[in-house]
Length: 238
Image (cartoon, rainbow, N blue to C red; front, side, top):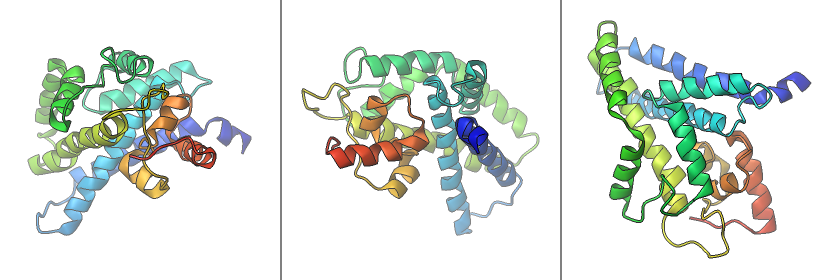
């Protein structure tokens, strides 16, 4: 039990990556029928698992996947960033730390004082590179030799795109939009206390004030942090 508690972060990371990989493998080998309602359920499920892969990369940026094993922590972050459309883990790490240091300012790479669509475009251009697009195109054409085209589009490409919207909307736009109290140094707000909604929306990252206040907490500990801030009356709702 002590070993499990000590290595819980890496075990959860392995679980998320394994669920994403096994689900993708199953779906890429399944028969597609657009009249089957389960098709759309599986697209949403794969989207949620993609989000989990990115959240695991994010936790690696903060060093909390395997804090006692820095090299393993880095490898998990690199792997998850690569699986998530060939993101550059080093670049993600540098920009995310800038976000925490300069939240909601001109030096915050994740912030834009504009509407949702312009902000999302700016957010995408901040991180997406031409090399990612090339690698995704090459990978798609290689995988197309093995798996049906529609399976790749429905279960590999579309969930990746939807996941970026999920991460942006619940993890960046809602927490940081609009005005913030002048005494709030974290410039972040949290969604209302509802662990099911928080997990399904973005792995508890809707509890965003708690993340900025306690960046050393992995995603699966943010629910407890939210309960504590609710108890002392310091968190605000969207």
